[in-house]
Length: 330
Image (cartoon, rainbow, N blue to C red; front, side, top):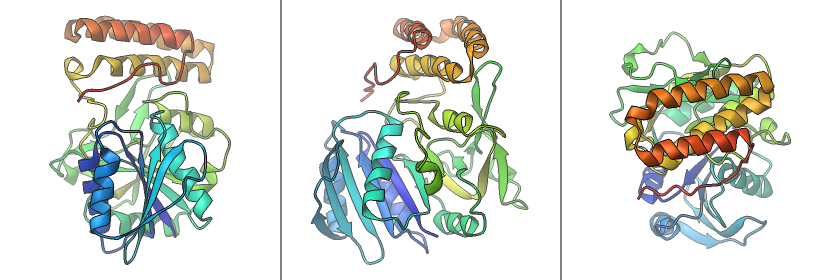
């Protein structure tokens, strides 16, 4: 079973380095690791190269397709790490797809891709546990893992549930102690896997438009589930534990007032873009609940956050997709 992690970096080289270290610290490590730098503005590429060069032999490799400005190969004793520099930051889906496309150009011997945000760290023997589970359960094309807060003891999510009535997405078991996970079962079920740690089979990635590239940020994993069709559920592997700093690249916070206003734009816009993939009745329903939600949140919003939320609703209705706003909280 060949599982290939893809780490997506944007202005978070310190977190990406810690993520790599956590992967390499396990008793079983992958034969290939890919880091995609989404055209960072903080010298991420240079700093990641400096770290990887200090633990490996460095080999420069040629750019092999459009969308990549640089690529490097780092050979360790038991694994090879590729660092890919994207020409531009086109968001979560496009960055991960660059990693998949690059990997497929190198080898056909990959069974699953483990898509990790840069601000994640594998706990305990998570890669070993994932490999063991997939070896016996190869029928699944899309899976999730348990995400933990930075303290390592509090559950951030055990997958997520999505309300098809109002478009609301929320994390399962959020805030509960890690002991709440039932160790008698290998998996639990959720509507969607949280994209910060998502496992995707090679068979799924070979399908046309399996992931939406026009959202830039948020709702990508929900749209994967919708496109696959019923039943809308995915397995969450309960002994694969990943710590997640949450929001290192975007500045996301559970407190609306603390979030960059552009995030409100993408949250509201992409909810409505998702509704269009379900049908006009869902657009009407999601629009109603979006307006109600915005009115409720207004006392907690700053002026720019409210304006961006309204703009997101408008552009969602007009089906304006892609990267329409820059996010920079640093």
